[in-house]
Image 1 (cartoon, rainbow, N blue to C red):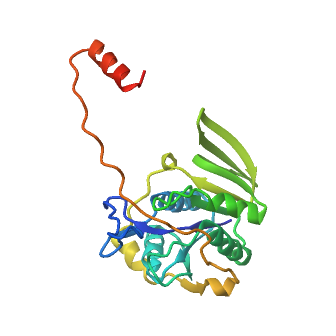
Image 2: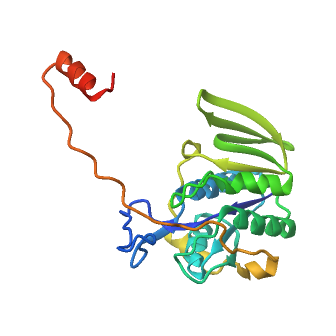
Image 3: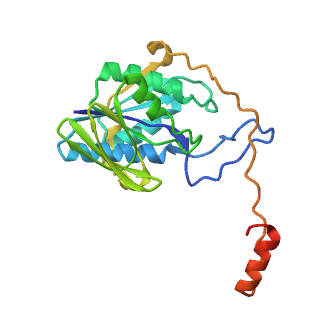
Length: 252
């Protein structure tokens, strides 16, 4: 079975994001970029499936700017077999919207014919949490979202999902789209030998036009602002004083 994993280039999760002075967006100048953490978990799970003999090839796909090559090379160094980069933007500040990403992925999947798509549940830059679901709808495939456990049982995938009430386990027919959550696994670090090998692994480059997909934005960012500064707390001497303060604030 072939597993396809979409990966996105995002600001590294350890970096404090800065908003541009004019409020037009986030400042990406000289900012460290890395693989979206949820996508990294998806790559790790695909590798584990291959190590368990349940997958025979892992293809990683990134849609965005040319610099996403670095992101794909990281996934290849982890253990993916080959990569596809779809150049869909020239400006690093351009974020391809979920529907356009899903449409391009659907075209890639038509060519690659994977048995399973493993994707991060969301990207940490825009928190859309929509691409996986849109892709499933476009393909007419089964879907399992927010996966904290995954097993392949013949022609079915057994997915344990994180839901508000706890955990829900479902069994879906393959091929399927599964989006992964943080508790699924802990991604491995790429070793130096594997980093060197990744440089020789196949990386094909395509464009959005090759797939006939219009990536023009449907949303307009009106303004971007920093989160409000948290107000200073109040130290109280007793439970009674705490209750009194809460009543004054209208919290109880």
